[in-house]
Length: 319
Image (cartoon, helix red, strand yellow):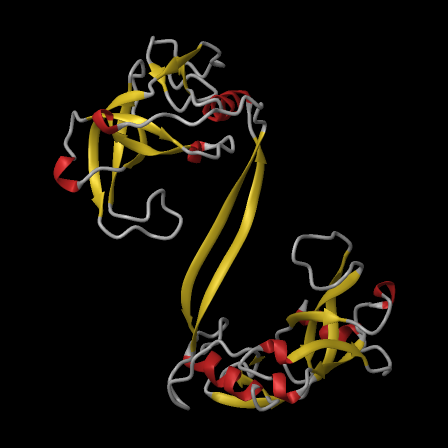
């Protein structure tokens, strides 16, 4: 998180990433297995056209397609565009062309990268598959295409059948907090929880949103809230997953701070998961001050206060 001044909005780079693993249907499984064997498969449709990559169902009749045929590995560039500055994760790290390539024996083109000088790229250009030296059973087994006259020898294929595929998913971007969020984040670096009140309905929102979603007016009246409140709803997490910080079972709950009108989500710890309940009174457990930053993670979790549960009517309108 960067801070330009005490008043300008805060910003920080954010990165969301996970591996998406999926099973393949009969068509894509054969296609991926063939790629691992350094072959490209198409499938013939009811109108005689050969499609690649092979769809599972006929695009004309919607019937299941089963007439698989080998195509390529040579083909012709149908159309192309130049990628002067490759991005992370793209097939090549130097400038290359994205091209629609109609493989020999196929009737529909497929999109892939062509490793060739810009001045050599042209529609109708003959190209050939350059295979990845480490096949995994996916489209990246085709490292790229290259001009047919410069194609090298192919590495040894792997004949193993492919029925699953794992695709890394990643999104990296810069998040700029709103002025109201920035004030909230600056407040939490000082151990203060700042909300904002709607001048019309009087509701207090935390983190502040800048406008009341009910009345549509700016919320400029800042309100300091205590770090204790009431559990409104919760769930017990029993499912382990990659990167999990806590060992299940544990509780994620919505906590309605005293004086607020909207709850936010946080962890409820320091008690057995099966003892957490709606109406339970809780208080924040802050991390050591030297670890504080402009983040709600300054609060490590909430824990029971031992007070009597809040009556349902107190939080019934905030579920």
